[in-house]
Length: 115
Image 1 (tube, helix red, strand yellow):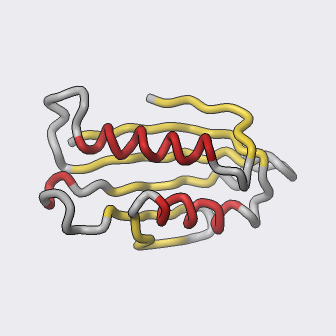
Image 2 (tube, rainbow, N blue to C red):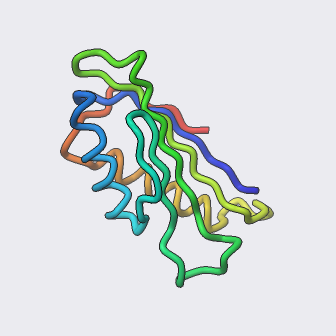
């Protein structure tokens, strides 16, 4: 199973985060499957790649550590594909999402770490 994670500290209020996250996910071709106060799950829309390569994203919003304008967010991007190559489908989607997050104008990244 391919799995890539990244953590961000964003300059936005806790109330603004869900809207921004949904916009980012939709702009990258993902559909929201589940949403709670501090958790979102989205999946890649089927039809472009085989089922085993479909990417699922989990977004964890750490509301316990959130401040007025600083919210920690962790993204987990994964699929059932074995990461036999460095440049696999999950890695490509992970990089696309990272690029979209860093370029989004609705918030300012304070810090980021990718694994």
